[in-house]
Length: 376
Ligand SMILES: C[S@@+](CC[C@H](N)C(=O)[O-])C[C@H]1O[C@@H](n2cnc3c(N)ncnc32)[C@H](O)[C@@H]1O
View (tube, rainbow, N blue to C red):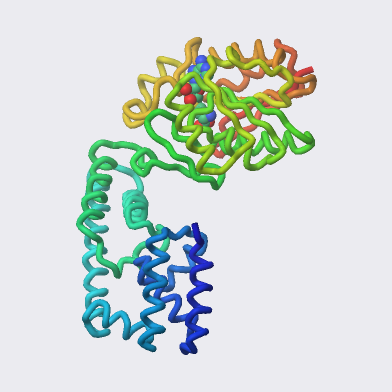
C-alpha cells in the first residue's frame, strides 16, 4: 500500500524530470483526477492508501503527459475527447445534480424523524464516495455512478425508514481515534467507554509490562485500544459470544496489534493466568425492566447479550468483584464502566471484597460512570 502523499511526491518528481512547468500543481491535478477528488481537498487525504489500480492509472497518465509533452489539461481533453470548456460545464452539472441528490436525501431522513439529518446523509455519501465528509461537496464535481447511487439510496432507506444505527450501516465506528468494524453481533462502542480506557492508561503508566484482562470484549474496542496505547502491555480479552470474538479479532488485525489475545470464556471460566495488573470490564448492565423501554433502534439491532444483566443489572459486577482478587496481583486495579445509578452500589461491593482507594468518575453528562479500585 502506498500513501497518497508519496504518490504525489513521486508524480511531482516525475514531471520535474521531464521539465514540466508547475510540476506540483500538475501532479495534484493528475492525482485528484484519478481519485475523483477536488484538487484542494487532496490535502485532507494525505494519509489515504492507494490501490494498485489507482497507482497504475496515475502512472499511465503521467507517462502520457511525458510522451506527448502535453500538460494535464491537454491530456485530459484527449482522454475524454472533449475540450476544457466542455469538461468545466460537465463538472458544474455534476455538482448541481449531486447537491440535489444530497438535499433530497437530507429531506427524506428528516421526514422520518432522525436527528441531525444533514450529518447522517453526509456520512453515508462520503462513505460510499470514499471522500472526507468535510470536503464532500468540493468533491461533487465528479459523476456519481448508478451503482454508487443505488448504494446511497439503500443506506439512506435503512437509516431513515428502518432506523438502523448508522454505525451498523457503514460497518464501522471510531473509538479513541481508531477505526473499528462493527456489525449486529457487537455493541457499538460508546464515547463513555473512552473515558474508562483513558483512566486505564493513566493507571498503568507506572507499570513496566502491564498484564490486563478485559471481560466482555464485544468489538474489542477496550482491548485493542489498550494494546495500541500501551505497547509494552499484554492484553487478554474474553467474551462468551463467538460472533463478538470474530469481530474483535478482525479489529485486532485492522489496527495491527500484536499484544492482544482473545479467547472464549464465560467471565473467568477459561482464564488461567492469575497475576493481572488490571481487570477492566464494561459488562452488560441494563436491568430487564429498563431494557423494555430502551429506544427501538437499540432493541432491534444491538445484541441483547451485550446489554442486559440479571439482578437489576448488577449480576456481572457482583460476580467479577467477588472473583477478581483471585486473578489480580496485590495492588492490582479493577476498573468498571457502570450504568445509571449503579456506581455507589458497585463501590460498596468492591469495599466488601478486598478493594480500597475506590474512585468514581463522572461522564460528560455528569453521570457517575466509572468505578475503580485497588486490590488490598
Ligand atoms: C456492554 S458489551 C461491551 C463491549 C465492549 N467491551 C465495549 O465496551 O464496547 C458487553 C459484552 O459482554 C459480553 N458478555 C455477556 N455475557 C458474558 C459472559 N458471561 N462472559 C463473558 N462475556 C460476556 C457480551 O457478549 C458483550 O460483548
